[in-house]
Image 1 (cartoon, rainbow over the protein chains, first blue to last red):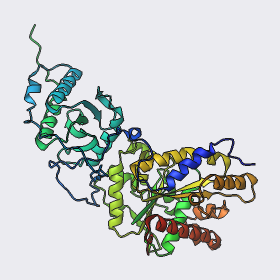
Image 2 (image 1 turned 45 degrees about the vertical axis):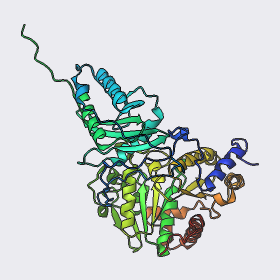
Image 3 (image 1 turned 90 degrees about the horizontal axis):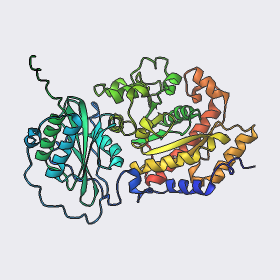
Image 4 (image 1 turned 180 degrees about the vertical axis):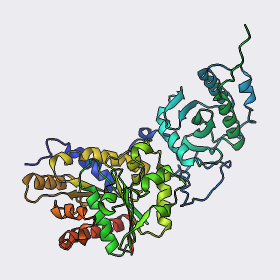
Length: 217
Length: 262
């Protein structure tokens, strides 16, 4: 008696097994299964803002994501972005509850960087804020943030091209609440100045408001 | 350097026994081999080194960027065979889901390669997620011990699904195949299960060599030795030598190049 037939779908098992024995040329699962949409064409080029630091096997410096295959004819990138705004305009607005500040930050990102999706994760990957419907990108964002982080080193952004005209920019930001991982879907990779401005803005947004002395009664 | 993860969906399938003795077989053949205990139960360390509870190890490396790799590597009496224990930090303390330790795992493997090892064999914790997932997505190849009994073999579909998912993240991962373990030639259910699995899976996906259930493994473990070192361990060692040859052959055919070289 075959002890397995009544428990297993033999055809399905064979299909899965045969797939494993073949080299992966095209992803066996749909891209959306792993957090990308069907337009995924590979990692974007590294930002010039990031220093190219060689791996050190002793200290175990995290490696950067390896570029993967791109489509033969990537779509042309849009023109260079307009001048980077300062975070001042964002912070000029009255401060308020944390969620309100984050929502203003999201609006600022939309306005200045055409960000179509903004989410914030804590260092463990738990969602702090997400109105982006990009839940599938959380795991990717957190992995990239961990992969790019180094102790006692400045913030390093990582970006991944997730579709034609869509890049996931991941920016780990050290804040008063600890490290926050910002994920933003933007039309093209952001430059050094933009990253710095966003880093500053999020730091300020995540800084608890100073308590003012209550008036004497 | 070639990195092979020894991983399984279920625990208690003889994974550590396979990892220890296969690593020893490679080392005996002159391949500079590092056996890494990435199972927080620390079975490799507990099997082979009495001081394993004191040794810094793999999980400590994941959590402490300042820990020098040379502190982790424990030499053995066989010059070509070294170990890394699992360490004092448990997977619970390490925390994080899959992907959280990818960078550290890869840093670890770069460090191992830089020290001239030809083969890094990693005994992972059961399951294809968390740190084990990070190890598998950083490895060149995976082999899967599978206990020859009906219940264990029913978990095969989940295993295959999991591996297909991991290959999306690591397309260069070569699936060396399933190795039947704890085969009991005096038990009909064990023999039938082994035969059914061979019938079910493509022939290339199941190692011809199978590991018998043998009291020698218990005795070897009690003495902190690979089975081949025992006085009457020649037969068992021959099994793992055969498995080593099969692994080399599979690596060669998947790479089109000679596999691990001594």
